[in-house]
Amino acid sequence: MQSGEVNERRRAVQSLCDFVFDSRRVASKEFNGIAPILKDLCDDSDPGLRLNVSKCLAAITATAAGRRAFDQHGFYSEALGMLTDESEEVRRAANVALRRLVISPSALFSDLFPKVAEHPLFAEQGELETLSCTSGILSFEEKKRQSDEKQRNSLLLDQ
Image 1 (tube, rainbow, N blue to C red):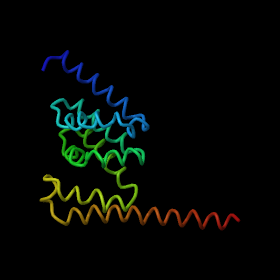
Image 2: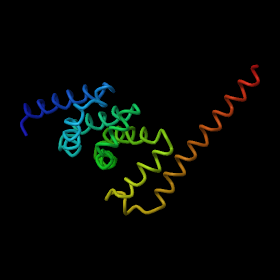
Image 3: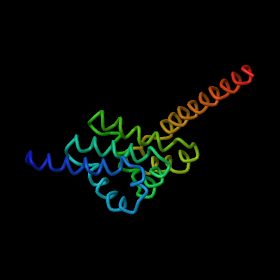
Image 4: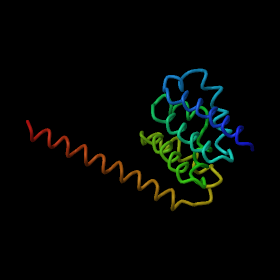
């Protein structure tokens, strides 16, 4: 691939990123045309392009409307695949996107876990990793609950 072509592709991906960083656009009909392009770019040979795409996925999942769009367009396989990318930055951005999907615990169990189980890279990992992941998320939920409880108690003491 020639340098000019790489730069042109990077500019095109940057335009897509600019589009998805506006949460109103992600919920628009125009996003329907962009989603397949983003999916195709998840496997691009250029790590810089994959990084931008993974950041786009993280931006998409930043809002409730974006998380719905992520689900409707089925970005699960692409995001899960990026968790094993050779680039640490790509893996990190994909991790952010997937973590944002589980803001609601119900979404974690109804949406994400079934997709993880179906994904070829993770289907063979077995139940131990799934249980470990679940316990990590549940311990996070427990810590959040304890923090909320402390905050309520301190408010009661202040009164």
